[in-house]
Amino acid sequence: MECEFPRVNSNPEEVKKYLTDTKSIAVIGASPDSSKDSNKVTKYLIEHGYEVFPVYPKEDTILGQKVYRSLKEIDKPVDMVVVFRKPAAVAPIADACIDRGDVKVLWTQKGIVNNEAAQKAKEAGISVVQNMCAMVEHRELIGE
Image (cartoon, rainbow, N blue to C red; front, side, top):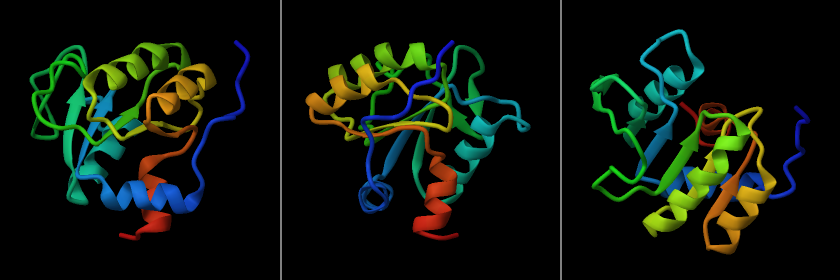
C-alpha cells in the first residue's frame, strides 16, 4: 500500500476554530478497548465537553455513550466526524457526511489520508483535517 501525502488539509488556525466551534463529534471506529488510540481519543473528547457519538459495529455502549452502527443512524446533529479507519474507508464516510448535510468537519487521524475523499468533502462545503490526532491538536491549540 502506498501512503498518500495530505494535499487537502487545514492550517493550525482553522483547526483551532474547528475544535472551538464544534459541540458534537461522531468517532468512526471508536473501540471499547481502553488500550486502543481510538478509545483514548474518544475518552479525551468526552472529558473535554464534546457530545460524542461512538460508531462501531458491535457493543451497546463505549465509555458510557450509546454506540451507533453508522453515521446515518445518529439522530442528533453532528458537527465533526473523526475517523479511525483505513484510508480506503474514508470515501464512503465522506459520502455519508455529505448525505447528512450537518457535518462541518471531516477529520482523519494520524496515518489516515485519502485526498480524493477529502477533495469531494471539501467541494461539498465540509472542512477537512487529515493525518492529525484530534486529542494532540486539542491539547496543543486549546490546552487541557
